[in-house]
Length: 450
Ligand code: EPU
Image (tube, rainbow, N blue to C red; front, side):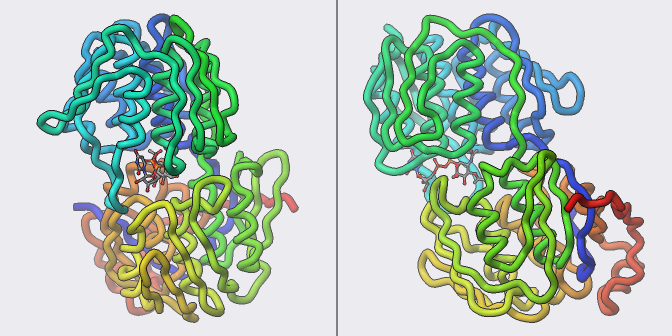
C-alpha cells in the first residue's frame, strides 16, 4: 500500500493552479442525468477518484461519459436505459446517491443503494427522501436499496429542511427541474456548490432562482438538453494551499482563487497573522514572519467557516502561539485527526464537538494515518512543517478529492512524495532533518505580484 512521505521545515513558495471544484462537479454529474437530448461538455473537471466513481455509476445507467482531454468531460445521458444504481459503487461515495431524483424525474422509477462516504459522523439521507416524497414519490427501503416510484412524474412542492444540507439541496433542485409546477426549497444550503449546480441546470434550460440564498425556487420544465459548462475552482483546495503557506511560513500565489468564496478563510488567515491579498488572477498568502497566532474557529454552513477546512486549519494551529478552539457544528465527529497530530507532538484534545489546541513550537515527523479526505491532507501539511520525516497513510482518501496533490506541493518546493516504502536514503535522513532526501524538487521561482 502506498503512503505519502514528507520531510518538513521548508517554506513553500511559488505559484499553484487550482483544479475544478470536487463537490460542485459531483452534484453536476448527477444533475446531468435530467438532460434527455444533446451532450453536456463539462470543462475544468478535476481528475480525482470521486469523479471516476461517479462516471462509472453513470456508465452503469447507460450514460456515455468520457474525458476528452485531461479536464474536459463529455456526458451524454440521452441513451440512459437503466434506472438501478448498484451497491458496489454507490456505497463508495455519498454524493452518488443524488442520481436518485434525476432518474426518478425522468423515468418515474429509480432504485439506488443507500450511500457510503467518509467516516465523519452519521450521514443520513432523510431530507433527500422526504423532499422527493413531498414531490409525489413513493419511497420504500428494501434490502439496502431505496426503491422510488412516481408513475405520473414528480410535481412541485414546498420543502423545508430542518438544517442546511448541500447534497439534499442540489439533489432536489435537479429533480425539481423536471417536475410539473414550481418547487420551493426553504432553509436551502447556500454554498457556492449550490450556486454552481443551479447555474448548470439553468444552462441545460432549467429555471432555478435564488441559489446562494436560503430560499430557492425551481420552475419545472418538460425537458432539458445538454450544455457546455465550466466548473469553477475549488475553494477547499484554495484553503488547503493557503494553509500550506501558513504552516510552513511561506509565500504562495493561488491562481484563480475566487475571493467571494473565501471570505471566512481569509479572515481567519489574517487573524492568524498571515498577509492575504487578491488580484485579478488569484490570491497571494504570505507570512509576515514570526509564529502564527492562535484563533478560534467555528465550522458551520456557508457563509460560515467551511467544515472541510477545519482539520486543515487545525494542523497550522497546532504550531500557533497560544490556545485555539475549533468547534464543529456540521458533523458529529470530525476530529479523528487530532490523535494523529498528537503523534507529531501536537498538544490537542477534544471535548464533545470542540478540539482544544495548545500551540507548540515544533512538530516532529512521525508515522500517521489519515482517516478521511481532509484529515489526510491536514497530516500531509503538518508533515511539511514538521522536523524530519513523516509517513502518512490514507492516500486513497486524498485521491478522492485532490488532483495532483503531491505534484502541486512539490512545485512549491515541498519535500513530499508517494511510495510503498521510504527510500533508503530518505529513511536515513529522518533523524537529521531530511537534508538527504532523494526527491528532486521543482521549486517554482515565479515572481509573486504584490
Ligand atoms: N443531513 C441530514 N439529513 C440529510 C442530509 C444531511 O441530517 O438528509 C445532515 C448531515 O448528517 C450533516 C449535515 O446535514 O450533519 C450537512 O450535510 P450535507 O448534506 O450538507 O453534506 P453533504 O452534502 O453530504 C457536502 C460535501 C461535504 C461537505 C458538506 C458540508 C459533497 C460530495 N460533499 O456533503 O464534503 O463537508 O457538503 O459542506 O458535496 C469533503 O469534501 O471533504 C466533504 C465531506
